[in-house]
Amino acid sequence: MRNWRFSATDTYSELEELSESPEDEYQERQTFETLYYSLVAAGRALLTSHRKEPLESSAMVHSDASDPHKRKVVKLPKIDLPYFNGEYQYWLGFRDTFSSLIHNDDTIEPISKFHYLRASLKGNAASSISGLDFCGDNYQSAWKILCDRYDNKRLLENHHLNALFKLDSIQKESSVGLRNLVDTINKNLRALANLGHAVQHWDILIIHITTGNLDSVTKREWETHRNKLKDSPTLETFLKFLSNRANVLETLDATKQDNSKHSLNSNKPKSFIVASTSKPRSCPFCKKITICIIVNPFGHCQLKLVSKRLKT
Image (tube, rainbow, N blue to C red; front, side, top):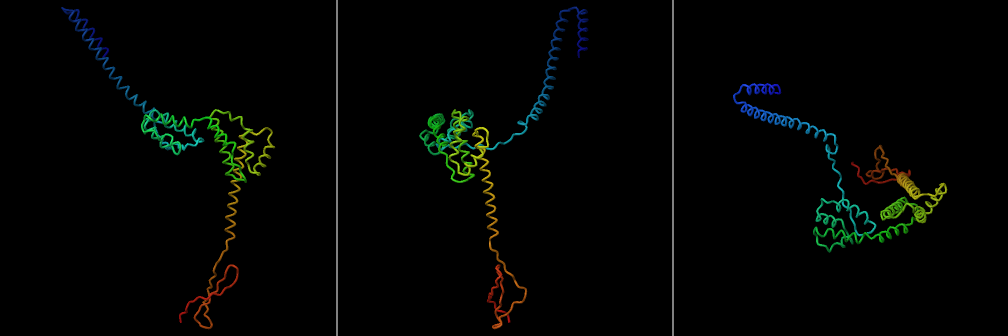
């Protein structure tokens, strides 16, 4: 096309020289070139668009194939909403979970948030907002009522400290008792840490309080273990000892139960009947009653008369 354009230009130059009105020839030439360049530009744009679309489509396919999140959608398990019944020890967990799932989600309408909130409350907590009309405008008011009532730092601190200072005493060795003790300590220390307290420095205090609530055997085992340590034990070391002790007791309890079942089965009296293959003997007197001999497990023979008339 480019060679043809040069040939046409030369031809127009010759025509202008031979023409009696060169201005008309020049004007015609300008019109031709304008049309020519317009068509060339349009053709190039059309070619570019057709070449670009397959590339973009291919890039999208490649991107989808390389991105595992776009290639495969994994259905996650349903997350159940937490429940709160007004007990202070459960408030922080409920507040944080509900805030993350519902309260801080701007895509959920206020009326829906209020519905989820009411469905999650029980007992005193539900009663605290029962006076509010069920409408979207009251959701923020309901949430504020709960926060004002249960976000009471002093009451929360007192509750968790009382739980640590009033641990249930273990009267005898018990794996369940030890595990409950460990869980109670961890739960309340985490709550106090969330309230801003440096619980990492309370090791010696918590160990001293907890040791007084152990059964005598576990306490003796702990003191023996403690004397083998070069440095003062940490709370982590102490709780790990209690967990290991609970594992040992669980193993011993399981073994004891298995042995008890085996003993019961072995001591169960067994009985059996020995059937005689000889012909039944008739009574020497009436000739009509069969005498059967039954041998019991103790080796004693017992005569049993079976009222069965013999066919004559």
